[in-house]
Length: 170
Image: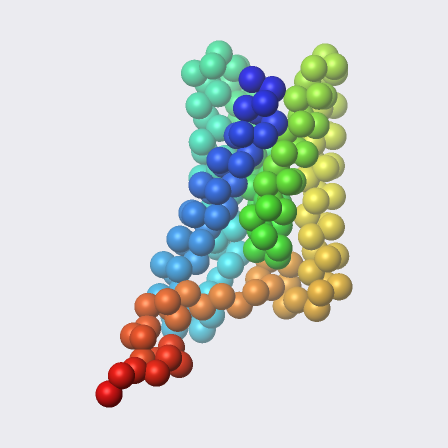
């Protein structure tokens, strides 16, 4: 289960929640981007983080107590924001790497039989640190903001071929 928790699960979750759902939200929202004038990547980050957090409710079925599940859901929400920011400012591999590190540290801390409040405090600190590193990196890269740094306009994908700059046969 260590292999699944530390490596397999982060890879699958990042591809589902960040790569697929976050990008799906961006592409759907960008089709109506004229409402706001641009794609709002913050909403995509929050959307994927909420879904990522909600999927951790399944821990109730594994015998976890309700307070532990709620704590895990809050941590998962913050982690989802950090992982989405990492993906939107880098690649999916950067979010997978952060997720692997996060899960490994979490399992290591809980294996040491430390008090739950201490484990949660360390995890929150690490997640805030991840977000600050991403923010610092994006500022150094002269991005617009740490969440909305790449202006993706997925409506480009829905244009007819002739409007994409490709030549059509006459």
